Image 1 (cartoon, one colour):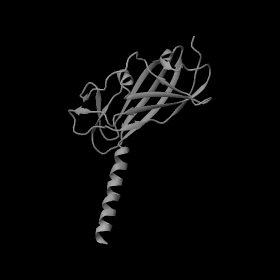
Image 2 (cartoon, helix red, strand yellow):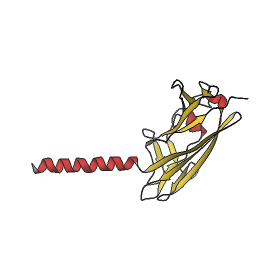
Image 3 (cartoon, helix red, strand yellow):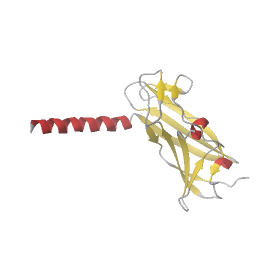
Image 4 (tube, one colour):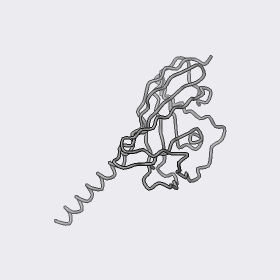
Length: 170
């Protein structure tokens, strides 16, 4: 009976540890706005842990490597429109975390990132004056990461969603 209680206790601690790893980083989608043929987005990465943590900062190349995804989901018919500015798909080589492609965030430290997206790079194209639910994804779990940092974020994370009203392309 003692062994069973010890096993259950260890299992409980293991589950708590796994759940706490999921909450090390918050991924907040701050805004999405349309300006002529572009869509501007801004999002924030925030270290929720009690230690300094290196966080990979996604860029356009990561969209081509399917590490960073921007999804617009139509409220009309649930069609998923994915931003893909590439005419090729990159092979996924190991990511080497260094001072150029990541930021070290102190506990509760934040990094705000802005991007401009060309409307013509959505597949399928965004339609007329539709409403879309927009969300962002970073997928690092399963990516081979080489790091000069001891503590770094390497899981999948999905942002909150925002509503976007498309204006037609001029």
